[in-house]
Image (cartoon, rainbow, N blue to C red; front, side):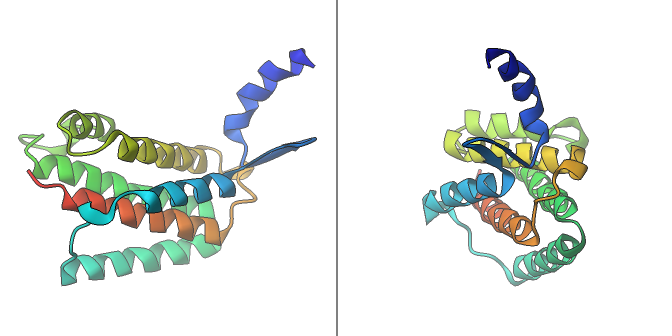
Length: 171
């Protein structure tokens, strides 16, 4: 049995759902775990949204839900794109970049936000988990046949909570 461990460990990141005897890995469950962790974060950092921001969020919700009906992995990628945009916008707002957002990656921006204590390590961990799920959705869409529209909508809800947290960060 030991000879099977290494090959399985290389396959696991590419699967949405895998079952072997009592072992089962499910992307839907991973999204649920992220939701629980996101909801458990303190709400004192949340921002108050302007009318424009509410409209923008409603439009994003509508777009992601529409895409999720056809392709849940594509909806996850779309939702992550908005979260990544907000990460870079937050870095820009805090003066992390001088001329162009293109010079700073979301990875660098997140590490700087954690280093300056604008973002907690717990929030960073959640963002990294969400990025991992996005990467699976973007690069292995054929293997994600079990991903549902509800999974994509739940992922979006997590994205919106984290966007709200990023907008609440002040200089």
